[in-house]
Length: 380
Ligand SMILES: [Fe+2]
Image 1 (cartoon, rainbow, N blue to C red):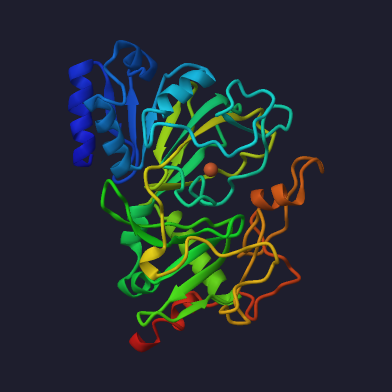
Image 2 (cartoon, rainbow, N blue to C red):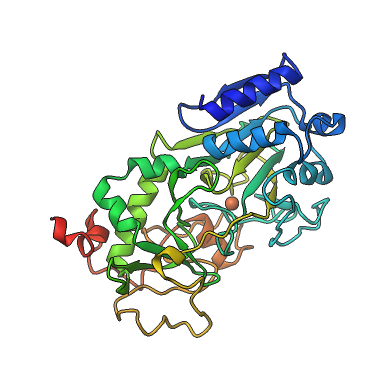
């Protein structure tokens, strides 16, 4: 267990020696049993001012996520908001639609049934709030209804481990790149330093990126073509799915998973949108961050203007530019609508990543290093 989480273990044992805290994998995730967050808040041991909160936040920044077992089944929306507000800037940042069955406006109620919650988003690796400049600092996921065989969990991937998996040539290219959110035009650097752990980390939204910009050492700007984008996104997907970076969580009744949204990406597991194994409901909370994830170090603006469907004039003609809720589609598939036609095309596409068959790539399968070729030529 990393040092900040060992410190948390000592602190929690001082509070209650029966608390069990253990690593979920070598580099990602920590599980805590026998520790009810709401009771610790009620006792005064846990508040924004106490060392226990800081220790929880520090462990989360390094391990990516904390799985709090046995928190209640279910926690109320008010309780989940109180717990979530311990972290980051201390207030919710809620940009979601509020479902009629959500018991608090800050609860994003997600389900595989339209009558029970909002269906659709989350099938690809992403960080919540990627369409904002600051990107939410933390998020909480509380399971409310679990499908029968416990399937349809959430997968997490450590952005610092992803950075460590890249080879030096790839890293040098990525450090000169920024991703443009298709839904807002906001730019984020792909490689950044986590503000608390100080780890170099790799940020990307694999379902809502509309362009990737490259800035050379001399300040020359360009943007990636379809082949380069498809190659890059396939490579990043492989790294996020890597056995070292990924943790595939299966929910138990009462779980509250709190993540540092700048330390891990996440995605809904296969089957999350199907009713085959029964009803699934997850309550998500999102926390306002203390920092902006800015691409200013590349002398890039905070956002590029959207609305006309056309890229900035400095984009080369072959460059990708996508606007809208669903970004660049980077691998082939057939959209699978398990809702019986009740969902919008956008929702179906979010569930099943696929590219538009009318916009084929020049090569059906771009070569694995197509995205580095143009920018690392001098090293070849
Ligand atoms: Fe999400």
